[in-house]
Picture 1 (cartoon, rainbow, N blue to C red):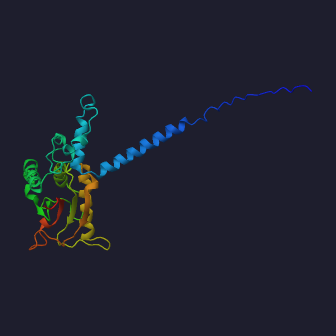
Picture 2 (picture 1 turned 30 degrees about the horizontal axis):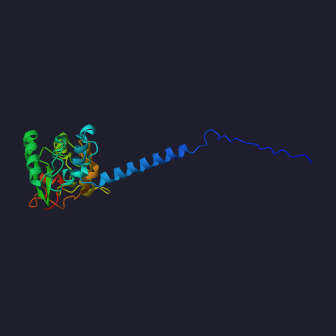
Picture 3 (picture 1 turned 90 degrees about the horizontal axis):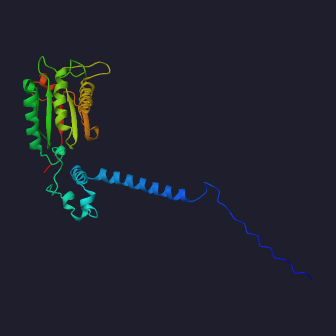
Length: 252
């Protein structure tokens, strides 16, 4: 009987191009990095403006060659000191955005009004109101903030709003805007002093946003018609026609 020959056949398999697993690793790295980025953005949004400013200042002055291997967490008070007396100061360009007291802001806005609006300062009233600083733009006979029955601001109103916008746009405080009319009846079948005062407040809001106010800071825009007169003994006094801009401060 003849011996049978055993034949061994070797088959080499070649992976088709494009069906390897390396792309999965790259994709996983991308998704992880993307998740880390959005997590970082969320964490930054939860941090107070003061702490955000300190973190920004830290990385602005960070040197890889001088501080490699170090973490700002080794000295967390430099960034997270609640007292505001961190070793690294808030950048100069951010001064005025944090830790300004109501009294300091009131003094600053009065000074700006005196310097830039001295000829019409009698039509601007600055006072404290419910823990905040209130700036009121008042009509005067012959010098209205809005034309009679109109929501279009006069050049006078725009001039005042621009100065106010310059002084509050870098502040982190919340802002409320109120519109008021006098007791003169302005009413049609579908329009009254309620609509007029509200729309004037909305117009002031739009103008302040043009001058740099972040709309995120707005907490109220409302119209009160003639229900909250400034000159209560004379409801028809033109000074009752006004816009109130309130910068809110935390109560001590």
